[in-house]
Image (cartoon, rainbow, N blue to C red; front, side):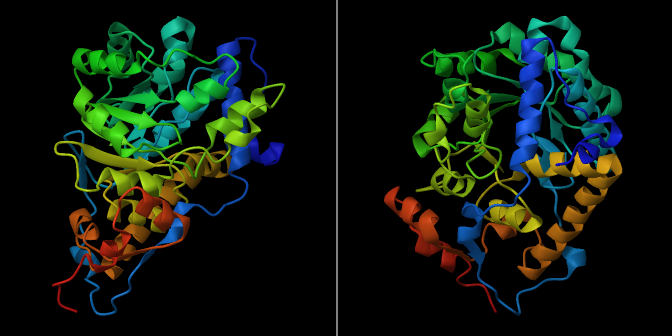
Length: 375
């Protein structure tokens, strides 16, 4: 990305004397660099079976969903990105403006920096300044105390709390945490302390079925599988290291698609809602994630790229375009609701099919999910 494009509407990553803030600026810069080329990912292993005479009238399509007990007009949202530096605060303000204008939910990035340094709080509270009544996710990791988790929710007057689970990122990060054994009980304590629903969110490496089952037992209400295929924090943190020692971690983890497949096999986990993010490049990827069982889908990297290149107006136009295309694709697939999408026929191929089969998923069954429906 050229400096001229990045400086649209005041974007300038610059250098920050505060190490926490500089790390946030590094994350923004490196995440944008990863967006320069649209790469193949596991969503390309999923194809819909085309039934020519199953399409429904677009006027009958209902794109709404319920997430964390709230009604959403659209089943996608602006997922966690940033906060904790002047540049990050500027991005959060612009994202919030787009969210407010499109009635879209949004999440902030990790609030740890603001919990440590009061002067960084405005880089997060700017979200509520620009989107006072929208649905907002607060964001902390499992290393914070229950009291700090409550503080993060109060800081944003948040409707829900994302707890990001990022051991791979921490392991590669030079200054990262190394004590992971206490995380399950810390998550349980956070769930018990905060007054809003808690979403356990990976940061791009996906969740296995046993991990999802453990999270459900800890009391989280939703899981965002956030799998491999989008912004890669192992690559980002390795790029920040002077020795680049963890070059071999580029392909670590589960893809978003594989995470969704194992999350629902052999059967869905009662009472646990699935969200998805990671590698969602287009409305078609969005529809595939919904068809695989997600109630809503988070988008980060693509929306950030649009924002930095085209500003708030450009992002609003992109979100509105995605909404139109979502309705069109659902109509084509004969799905009047999100629930209908989850009964459409899917062909699962490539490495995703191989990996899913090894994990006990009957991938052939997805090609026959609509049996009994009239053509």
